[in-house]
Each structure stands twice: as C-alpha cells, then as structure tokens.
Image (cartoon, rainbow, N blue to C red; front, side):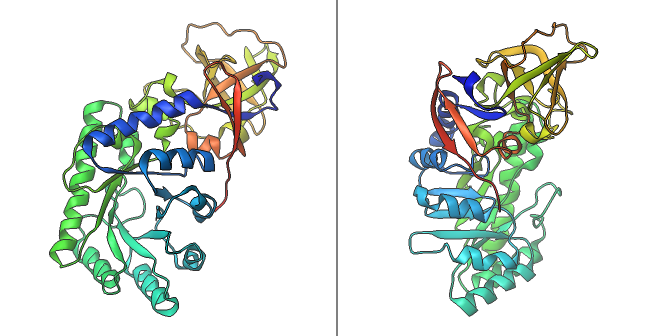
Length: 375
C-alpha cells in the first residue's frame, strides 16, 4: 500500500505512462516519420525498453551516464544532446561498437576540429550534427549564419563525420495555445530546413534533419524534409506542459508521495516531509495562467484537491496551503497520512529520487524501477 512506503518517494502511474506514449506514437505514425525519445526525463532501463519496443533502437541522451547505463536496452543509435566538449570524447568512444553508433552535437569550428583530431589520432568515429539555436537562448549556431555552418560542415564532412542538423524549439515552453505552438513548430522546421539547405548547397550530404520539443512534436504539424522528431517529457508530462496546453493535469503520470507532519494553525497550512530536495525548486508555472506554486496537491489516490498547492518549500519541508484567491477550504489530515504532489517539471523532480514506485489503476504497487543520476 502507498501509505506503507518510506516518504518522500516517486509514484509512477503505469496506465498514464502507457497512454502518454501511445499519444505521441499516434502522431508520428500518421506523419510516417522517425521518432527519437529523449531519455533524460526517465533515466530508467525499464522505461527505455518500453520506448525501444514502441519507437525502435534510437534515442537521445543528455549525459554520458545515460548512454552507459541504457545501451543495454537495445538502442544502437544515440544522439548526445548537449554540445560536446573535447574532454568527453574519450569516454564517449569507449561506448562505440559495431552495434552502437553515437552522434554528438557541435556549435563551433574549434570543437569540430577537436573531433576530427580525435578521429585521426584514435580511429574512433564519433559522428556529429550541428546544433542550431533558433531563439538565441543557449548554445548553437544561428540558422542564418551560413559561413559558420559551412565551415563546420566542411571540417567534419572531409572525414565523413558530419551527419546533419539538430534543433530544439525551447521557446515552445513559453506558449499556451495550440495555434502559437503550431506556428512555433513550423518555424522550428523552416529554420532547420533552411540551415540544412545551406549545407547541401555547399555539397555536403545532410542525412539527419532532427527537430523537437514535447509541445511542437505533439502539435501534429507536418514538415516535409524533416527526417525525425524528438521529445522527452511527453512520457510523464507535468504542470508546465499542462500550462502550455499539450496535456491535461489528469494525464500527468508522475507524482511525489509525501507524509503529513503536522497542521500549522497560525498560517493555515499542512506541513509535509517533501521539501525542495524531493520536489525541486522549479517554478515553471509562475508565468503561466495557473500558478501551481511548487506542485499541485492530491489525495493519496491521486484525486486533485482543488486550489490546494505547495506554496513554499524548505530543504525537507513542504508548506501546503490554499492558493491565494482560491475558494477551497484546506482539508484536515492527521500526521502520518500521505498525499501526492504533481510536479512542475518532471525532469527536475525525478532527479531527486533513485526509483519509481509503479502503480496500476487501483493504486497498487506493481513494480519498483530503478533510476539514476550523474553525468
């Protein structure tokens, strides 16, 4: 039973997980396009095996630890999402084999040259895509920086290390309606295809043209010329994604089980044992129409408690109150009773834990799946 678990801990609803995976599979199947799931959200062998069964032996990772821990799942085509730095090449190369291709991303000529030098000195072939920055918010080459694109592409292509273009529509997380998300998806595809065309006109083959974010992948926007879509948080969803509009709160598969410590009458608050160490400090819903504080509170069975949220967190304490302006009355719970909290950002919350307690529709624990952290 859930109340017998040591709290705080992660609860994963298997039925919702499966439904969320089916949701995106339906979209990519209609488009007849490859899909590359991002494993950074789950960091779990059992979940990865489910994804391989549904989408094939390709995946994206954000750490080498993910690559090392999950290569036994049947994946033979890894794409490393964070623009590579030279001191990681040797460790990546140790995972290469005839049955395991690894592609990294680069965003400058210096790193491209380092990748070539590594290949020339070791014979280890690590392919690369050029990472594009579509919205100026982090690493990547701007899609209209033709000279830079061609210079990097030619450097890699001379030694048959160039594979293609990669972009991520990070700006989609700031949107909140279907039409804006579709426009973002079109822009993501158009800019990526523009950069790919620049490379191809320079005589460089562009095998892979890969785009993705959970909101744009779920938009259903068809883009001729794009070879694959990517997404990660779709498997769990979270409150930020519900605010963006790509899922409903009831579809969120991940929650944190927490025990009631006490009731603080002075501030009309329930004190629980899940603080920022268990929930994270992510405040991604702050700028959205509905602000969930540090998480939406639910009863033990997962039923939402309207307008009751985690309003504040300390390291090991969570403060649960009725949201400001809410009409609800704070329920009373005895010390030791358990509640569930839906996360703002599934990746950040999951990172605080070492396992998933997997439950069925009846909230019975049917399995425990290990997860990992590290780089």
